[in-house]
Amino acid sequence: MMPGGYRNDTSYRVIVAAVLLILTGCSDSASRYHPLDTRSWWDYETQTTILEKSQRQRLLITNLGSGVYGGDNIVIQRQSSGQEIYLSLTPSAIEQVGIRSRTKVTPSSCRNIILPTDIEVGASWLAKSRLALIESRTFARQDKLRNFDLPIELTFTITAIDDVIDIPAGRFDRCIQIQANGTRRSWKRQS
Image (tube, rainbow, N blue to C red):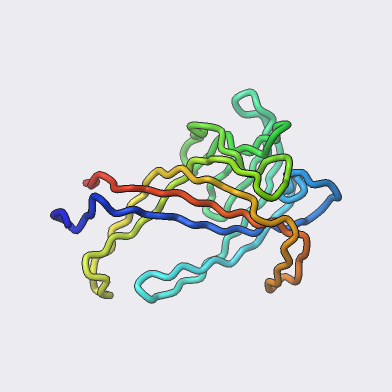
């Protein structure tokens, strides 16, 4: 271990599984699974556990309307944090083209695919994301935690198109499942 508790050879693997619900329509297209119509909204409950302490939070996502950004026709999607995501529907995918925080608009460094237009098992795509790490020297409750936000590239793959899920909102069939994998090896200590 290097001074400060950092490991320079540790691999960090992120595995993310997401289930998107079929909400409307009859075709196998991206907007069927990720509706872009104005005023659609989703209410999620998330749970985070750090040092055996669980915290539940509510995440509300709302489609606000359409606009133009960087020459693209977009749908503006607001998260309960106040952040707005700019989405564009292209012939091949729904793509994230920009993000607006409370203070500024930042163009996406590259157009991240949210969901391809053709939904089929095995379809894969790359997207840039951020990896949030929490460092602790001893993992004791009184230990000071440090947060790190690191860039990572994820490979998303559609693993199923006919899942059935049961959640508090009800039972949903014909859902798609997407798995995302990425690896991050070492990082530089940040001051």
